[in-house]
Length: 442
Image 1: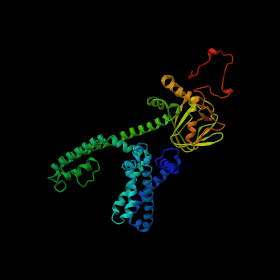
Image 2: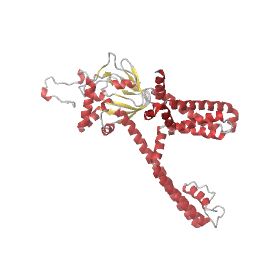
Image 3: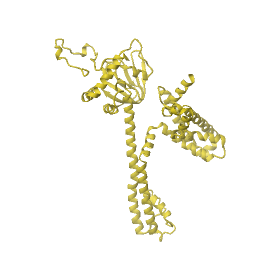
Image 4: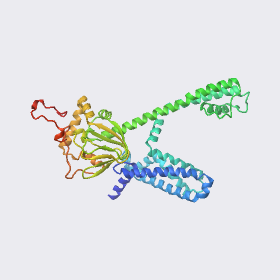
């Protein structure tokens, strides 16, 4: 039992899943520093003066880093059978399938230098240097932007292949023309079409080293046309990658936002299209470290999603912290009461805000969506879900806090009248019952 618990905890830390976010973040930052430091040391080690002065120390540091990468690779293989897509294959085959995945192959590349140094100390010097420098590929695991760029290039591979074929076609044609034109005047520099290809590549890419240039008038005319065409040709793949990268970033942000909204209990029974409608209501807000997000005593009329950073919530009898991917303030969509907690940015935060008024307007326009949300709120109230202040049970569980103390109470009905105190209500006692305003839940 202890072994399974340790393995599960190790999996959550290595793969950044579950509730061990702080440990996973710390491990990720340590590995990123090791990768960057290892690359820098591998480059410095090639400088003769530095190698002579610090060779022993650099070798020791490289061996220590290599040992860390080997341990990381072994541990990732050890927990590979806990990956949801691989569980059904069993311990051996799940690990084999994981070992053949791109991320695992990159981890293996990071671990190989130490193995080569230990078993082939003199025969694999060049290979070890190359593999050490290739460790920068491990950064893709920890950089969403880099992974998005790789995905963008992969998704547009056909368009990139087409533009590459056009560029090489122009290079071949211009090299052939220049060979036919300049061969008589410069037989040493344009001895063949292959020599012309070198000139064409430097010209199309607008590099122009100047070591091979046309001397005839016709050759100069052709070179001018090729140079002008080069600007447009190089812009083709750049434009394709840039647009695909922007689309990939937008799609990734939408998926992350969509998944955060889908985790909210109030929206968990909505269809994908309905959740997408709710995500359109979100407003972005950036909060610097230490600034107040919500003050105690304010009317709770909005819900917050944490896309980046960490917040501190000071309850009357406790203080909890919520990090990236968490949400709080769901009860603000159900019942606008006075806040009993002060919320501040523990670290610089990027928040997404859902206002109760915007959700009500959406519910007024979409009767089916309103019915599902009201039914869910009613079921949660009937089930006796606990709240602490204005934080729901699920929001507290994100921080490992359970609302089972004396301060906990059951969730209110959807949009029931807020308890803001007598000074906030203007009720005419002589008002006739038939003229009372109905709430949306009626």
